[in-house]
Image 1: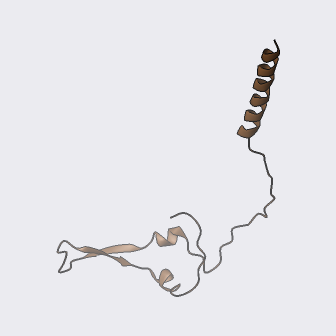
Image 2 (image 1 turned 45 degrees about the vertical axis):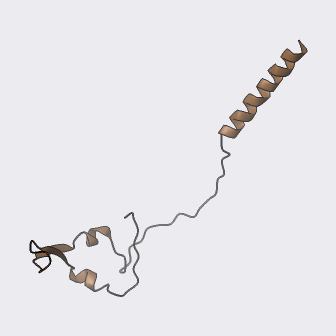
Image 3 (image 1 turned 90 degrees about the horizontal axis):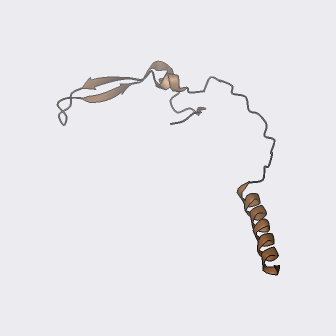
Length: 88
């Protein structure tokens, strides 16, 4: 009888311990909300998508190689610091 109480109490304690380990504690950290602003030196994916490619033949690859043709708005940002966000 005594062993039954011991086993039953050990089982109840282990259930409480296992359920408390399974649930992570919630920590709420208030982060300041950053608003997205577009400045003149912001480079967007839409602007990068406007790069065109021209197929030109070469002596190594007679079927042609694709060369990028960069538009003037991208050339204006050459060697300047820019802001870019998103995924690659």
